[in-house]
Image (cartoon, rainbow, N blue to C red; front, side, top):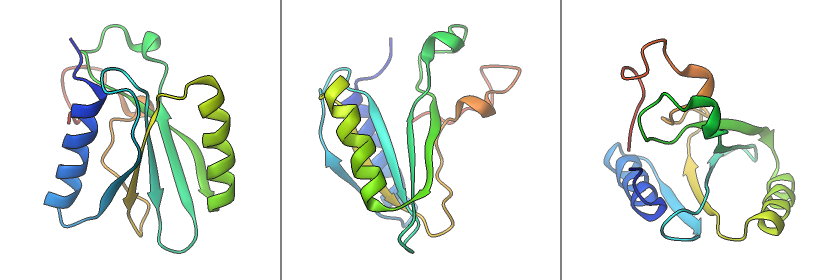
Length: 124
């Protein structure tokens, strides 16, 4: 059974702070199963957006979350437009913002799933 969105987001924020970074929840969604999106602020006006990868494609993985990059190095207005569109389809989403000057964030990415699904995937 997969952990709730609220628990997952809380663990993510704590991990970022524990590593000396900064993260904030800018939109709280449904506690149990709201989709989780992650905005990476590169601190130069550019933002990256990660969203849930289609989980059905990875049915053999343990019950974790996988992400995929949706937007790369866009401005705040482009991010706002994308999330407004998302809200029309699913108003219960979460948005976590993480500051990372180099754009690197420790998320389990769908395109990095190893051949052995039990190894090498970060879990919050």
